[in-house]
Length: 231
Image (cartoon, rainbow, N blue to C red; front, side, top):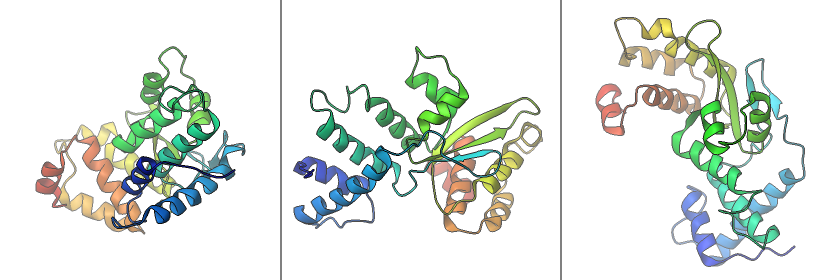
């Protein structure tokens, strides 16, 4: 099938795919990049993605691990335009929920799975195994955390990053955000403690994810994060 796309679609691709194309990229370069991403996505469309890949006992990793969430948004909308011609991506019953889930995760970084799923499918009874299977169609990682003592286990979802060890990441989150830690006099993580956690990370991606999770859990704006933690 020949991929035909509009200039707005190509501009959206450029905007959403940071680092891959320069602002001066020609229309032909944009279209080439769009085709490359689309062909990459087609490999996953007909595959059985529902189970994903388990990493240890607490992490589920999507097999769609060669696209970012922003890239997925672009190619899924293009896929919908090519294959579901009687509707639009925003109204398509097969695509709109995947698009909505991707946008929420991309915007929020880390989401609690049950809340995300119920907000997206308000008339559907939440079942964790079904939610995991649905989310495995996206380039995400789902991991378990027990932050309020025994029996408080919940699932969280974030964009999958190939260089992140999610088993280690889950253990770090467990240590930092557990109820016992947060009940102590020091309600927020000190700059020194955060530095120690970051030094435990083996890659820059790990360090960025740790920093993001710390700021997200405390509801810190970019300005406050810079004042508290100097980044």
